[in-house]
Each structure stands twice: as structure tokens, then as C-alpha cells.
Amino acid sequence: MVIHAETPGRHGQVREMQSSAQHVASHDPGVGFFVDPTSASAACRSDNVLRQTLATLRARRALDVLEFPGAVAKAPMLVAYGADRAEWGVLLRQVPELPRHTPRSTVDQLCALLGCLAEQREFASTVFAEVALALRAAHAPGTVAGPVGRVPGGLTRWQYERAVAWMDERLDATFTSTDVATHIGMSAGHFTRAFRVTEGTSPRQWVLQRRVQRAKAMLADAALTLSDIALACGFAEQSHFTRVFTRLVGMPPGAWRRSQ
Image (cartoon, rainbow, N blue to C red; front, side):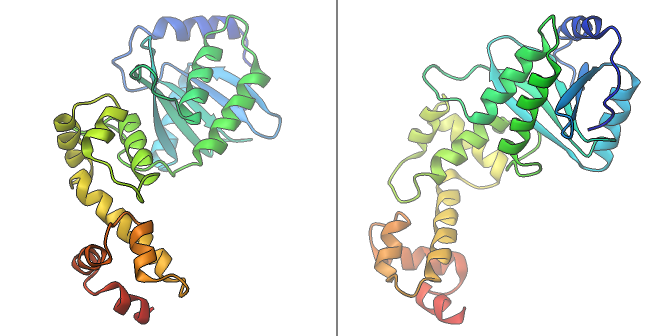
């Protein structure tokens, strides 16, 4: 995106980036990569262009933050996209490694791969650009749910995203907060407290709200009975479904269906 600028001393810039990794506590990146989607190429910058681009993206609210797990702490890294100027960017920040046997998301894997490519002595512009474009496609600019950064006492982004995705995939099943906490390597009590700080509600209430949202979508299908919808949304009985729906929406599901 921004400038496909020539990069004299490119290897030196990469080495400069590596040395900046010692300033991990900094929230701003020590290096940036500018990806031109048209030519599928990338350029590395660590000077005023990087700082100006970061400030511009923040001012335009065109900057997302992605936290990905890794074993070795590294400095944040900016990846900006655009042919003539940066249209959108993502700030990659590494967080502690996931618990063993926890699957990595596609976005996590792409972020980690970009981090590895950035450290290579011979910077592979085309390969870096292709991975960065794959990250943009997998992430979809502006769609990451939850807080941009960690709320004090709350979940980190990767914990939030993984917990929410796990629960969303099981709305039709029975599970507990302990099950979710185990999936992201936390104790049940810690997870429940951190989730409430992040979302403003308990995991249980969040799940009920999501189940009701799914039920609303299903109520549009006249062929589905209330009993069918209740079971598909994780309610063991239609009566329980009706009580929860009425409490959250203000009217029973049958009445809500007729009002649409």
C-alpha cells in the first residue's frame, strides 16, 4: 500500500528491526512493512515514513491490532496495505504461547509466519507480500470482535477470540464455563471474572444472548417449530426457551415471529 519505496540497505533495516525486538514493552512498532497488492510486493521501513503512516492510520481509524501467541517475545510490527498510500494496516503483537495441544487459528499462523519472514537475513518481498495478503483476506479488515487492546483485568484478544469462537460453535450443545476456560488454558474462576470485565456480562448470559440471536434468525423460517428452534439453540425444553426469549426480547418467540 503505501509507497512501494525503494529500500536501500534493506538487510540493515531488517537487522535494525531485530535489535528493536528488545524493546518489547513498547506499544509502537520498531519496523513496518508496506505491501502493494497490485504488484504483490513489500518494502521494509523503520524511519519517519513508518511513524507518519502509523499516525495516519490511527487518525483514520484504519488500524487493527492482532495479538498472536509465540514462544519468544518480539517487538510489535506494522503491516500496511495500499498501492499509493496506506489504506489500512494491522499492528501485530505477540503474546505468551498457547497451552500445549491448543490449535492455532489461521490468523495466528499467518501472523507467526510474517514474524519469521521479517527476521530472515534475505528479505523475500514477494513471499512476504503473499502471506500478508492472505492475512488480510483471513482477517477481513475491521471485523475482529472484542476490544482492540486488553482491558485491565480482562481477557487478551487471542483469549477472547478463541473463547467466543469455541462457544459460538457449540450453541446447540451443553457446556460450562469450566469447559471454555480449559480450552484457553485458564481456571474457571479467572476466566469468568476476566470475561465479565471484557464483555460486561457473564459467560452464561453471553451464551443465552447468542442463543436468542440464533433463534431470531431461525424464527424467520415458518417451517421450523418452536420446539425445533429450541433444540437447535441449546435449550433442552421449549418452555425454557420461551422464558429466556421473553426475558431478553420482551415478548414470547411466537409473538415475536408474528410481529416480523
